[in-house]
Image (cartoon, rainbow, N blue to C red; front, side):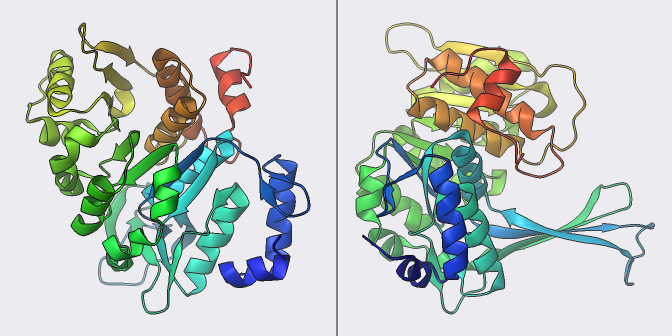
Length: 353
């Protein structure tokens, strides 16, 4: 048994905030009884970035070197955190391992994550580091002109910090790693954690190189074309190169590869020791796209949720692709209306419980 006040003190948030989050989780069926006992179900643990996204958009043509009128919007972000948010909304049990500062942004990140259904007990609160932030400046047409990121706090999520969460990491049913982590953290997760289901998001071409030494330990890899080129060593000229890229990654030991082709959809491949890989090419239906920013995170969340449900490989890919589509229909990075039922409704199949 644990009291709401004790929870508030552990999470460094107000008791009233805890009460509200507990009510939301109870309504979702994720808490049973008066002792705030979580229901027993497969758990996904996500390790990586959590940051605040700050987006400024000019209302007039940008003038360099001057103050420009416009709007500024802030929202929770970070690859691991955004995937966790989508995953929790789909109905999976989710724990986030990350690091935030003991500041306003950190409080806002934790509160938003808890409200979405993400377990935040294992998010480190740093007394010295500032919460990671990503700042983008867009012109009046919405095109990004400049971006800055301050992710220094993730240096504190090193091997020694992760070792404190070893029990959680080892008992998780599915582990996601994002390449925002530094080398010693990645080495710890791949070499010291006994885990057979590891999903990896390379994050960017610059950071993808960090995971290259561990390809043989990756269950599922979700790169874009540039990241897939870098990790496979195969140059992309046209779609005929996709099977070769995936086979190269399979040869390195990656069991499943889902390559994001942007507006062109996805190409998925699953290795088979007895036959040629299973492959699936999906292209998006023609519909108006509101925002593509969160599609990749929703895609990965869909892959993870479907795996936790033990659905077939083809069903997992199709479900994840539908999640990505729903993400593009919202102006927010995370579609607040995404759920397993909403995805199945879009797929025009009965909801599977």
